[in-house]
Image 1 (cartoon, rainbow, N blue to C red):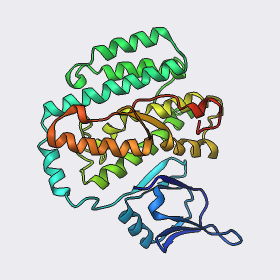
Image 2 (cartoon, one colour):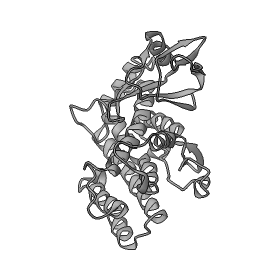
Image 3 (cartoon, rainbow, N blue to C red):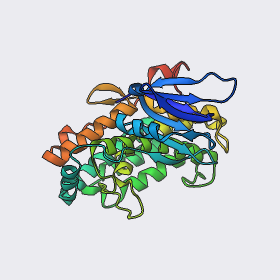
Length: 309
């Protein structure tokens, strides 16, 4: 699996040759070339770009996701491998036989880490003691499978403290636009890893929307979202509709942000692949202690302005 994310804002044609991705940007501009083995994700904004079928086949072979944007610059379509793993039938059987008790146990584990990461974001931003204590209460009251929706109550308090009492998560605002964009990037990375592992993305842990083909990815992305929340908070004055090129590029670059997994530092893109691997192992052996969830922390390079934030 590669480590680079390619952001293509302008391209006449995108194709492949000699195991490289080639970007032709038009007359008078030098073509760009990137080794496929280095790539993790290709992000295309130019609506006029022509993409060769040979490239799409090559991306599938290397397990590289390609995301295309709509006119609003938000991710609209993702191309992922059709047969990502030679044991797809076995993975499907494991998912179908996934006991509700095991699902509830894992979902509780995920949600607790999500709220823990949200608390860390609050510590590093508003440091609002009232909201912090309120969310700690919700965290302590999460029971098997979060039947009382402590996650939803915590999210409401969290977002209103971060972005203001009038903030509406799915409203038409620059903040919502930035959050949607960033979350889409993270979810796209999860979708790629899920497909490459042979898992069926329709079969989620908690999400079970019949109209959502990516229920599992929507579950696994939850404890990673706080990386986006933190970035958006620190760039509120720069947010516009549509989002600027610099903001969009920085949100994509959050895949290179570091999180802690089992005491070790990993970039978000790699931590996502590790979590998907752990999920497969959990399906097999039911050992929750082997599932490594990401712990949010402020990367030191972001404090002096030299990093991705």
